[in-house]
Amino acid sequence: MRSGTPALSPLLVLGLTLALASCGESPAKPPPEETPVEQPPQEVPLEVAPLDPDESLTGGATTVFRADPEAFVQPIANLTVERKSRFLLGEANFEVDWVPAPSSQRDRDGLGPLFHATSCLACHVANGRGAPVAGNTKAPASLLVRLSVPGTGPHGEPVPEPTYGDQFQPRAINGVPAEGQVQVTYESLPGLALQGEGSVALQAPRYALVELGYGPLSPTVRMSPRIAQPMVGLGLLAAIPDATLLAWADPDDRDGDGIRGRPNRVWSVKEGREVLGRFGWKANQPDLEHQAAGALLGDMGLTTSLFPRSACTAAQTACLQGATGGEPEVDDANLASLSDYSHLIAVPARRGAEREDVRTGKAAFLRAGCDRCHRPTTVTGELPGFPELSHQRIWPYTDLLLHDLGEALADGRDDFLATGTEWRTPPLWGLGLTATINGHTRLLHDGRARSVLEAILWHGGEATASREAVQRMSPKERAALLTFLDSL
Ligand code: HEC
Ligand code: HEC
Ligand SMILES: [Ca+2]
Ligand SMILES: [Ca+2]
Ligand SMILES: [Ca+2]
Image (cartoon, rainbow, N blue to C red; front, side, top):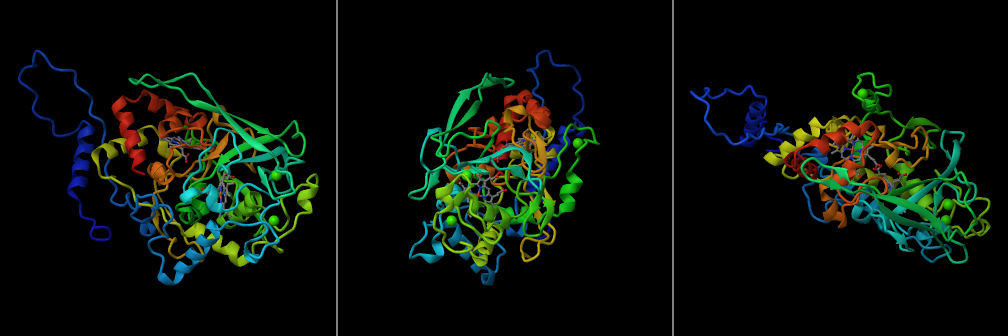
């Protein structure tokens, strides 16, 4: 059926019939001769959205049909055998533990002196999302903290905190003091009302950097705690043309729907110019190669040709004197393999898209205006070097644009053009597999939400009307919305 004739399946026909019926223009039965004396209160039937024949194919021809704990570690389905080695080499580099220099493992040394984790996989567990760890812990948690002080650097980037730099590293090699520990505590907020279902109390995180290894932080320091993001479908996001993002943007809200959306503009070291930002919670990275090089440096203390200088600040003398594992520590071939791997990880297919309750939830998603930011579908352009990712109809549920989501979610830290209240709309594909892949359901940029419903209830700013629509839904419609989101 997948590539055959687009014949209408019985389920689709049913969907269309139901959709028509819900418009109130269905061929009505003849009115009854006389009104019955007693009639139970009529429940207004919920709208059931029609099924798009393509919508289960989340990543077009790249889609894999997996829903098990390994669903996020698969190469795209249309990768030829000859090109699979690019995926496998990158996968090995993504999983390997780096060690301090000097070591007999020459191609694996150079970790630190300051670092956060010893491998990419340590944070991107099973290629899924991280979860915060409450309390003061030395465990390598997948929550990292970006740091800066007010102002912008020569290329519009945030200005690093003078002593601790642009990222807080909780670990260090022997003989070098670590920067400290991140303490997370949660405070219960007053409940938010849900029509017909009482209320939900969200938990607000409070962060403190403790056991500081290099003295006090600047009094003007800005902190942005962020959790590791899922690794699926990223090559397809890279392949969405700039023109598509620009067409979705509405910075001055010309159409008056209360939704703005604008692209971040960030510095490409490789191209030596400003380009659109796409990756990271604030669209603060231009592409997957920069993202990998940034992670190698900031998270593991590994230099590359893109970022050849170590992440130590002038105040961190022991760090500056630490041994290096080559110049650069990760060569261009290995950096390219990590970028290739990040492009070639498949996104799994939808589950149960044709079900009536799921399509009821889809109608609710559209009615609440979630699709104004979480754009359901688009077509990729031509991505040089990746014919498999080019010209695919995909279902990422994102516009990759920055939106103001309100003060409650704000980190108060600018990141290129992104202000302290703005975040990039995260893709929702793969959302329903979170528990299967990672054994938790923590969501949002710092993992504060404990469930999908909590994530929705944190929406403010431009998304206030959407959140209120969900609060006003009947319990049945709200349940359908969550069932739809679980099918993504
Ligand atoms: C310390 C934990 C940690 C490690 C180690 C780590 N990451 Fe990440 N990763 C994150 C966080 C946190 C983000 C979000 C960053 C941001 O918003 O600035 C992220 C974001 C990403 C993204 C962007 C995803 C998206 O949807 O935009 C990619 C790609 C990525 N990481 C790849 C890698 C690679 C490749 C490595 C190893 C070289 C790596 N990461 C190592 C925590 C980590
Ligand atoms: C104005 C744009 C906008 C609208 C409208 C909107 N969202 Fe979001 N959504 C975002 C942004 C931006 C984030 C990331 C916020 C953060 O991490 O702090 C987000 C995060 C989420 C997340 C968590 C994703 C993750 O990876 O952690 C879910 C789930 C979600 N939205 C669902 C919805 C639903 C359902 C609706 C409709 C009721 C909706 N959103 C409406 C912009 C929007
Ligand atoms: Ca190093
Ligand atoms: Ca640092
Ligand atoms: Ca608008």
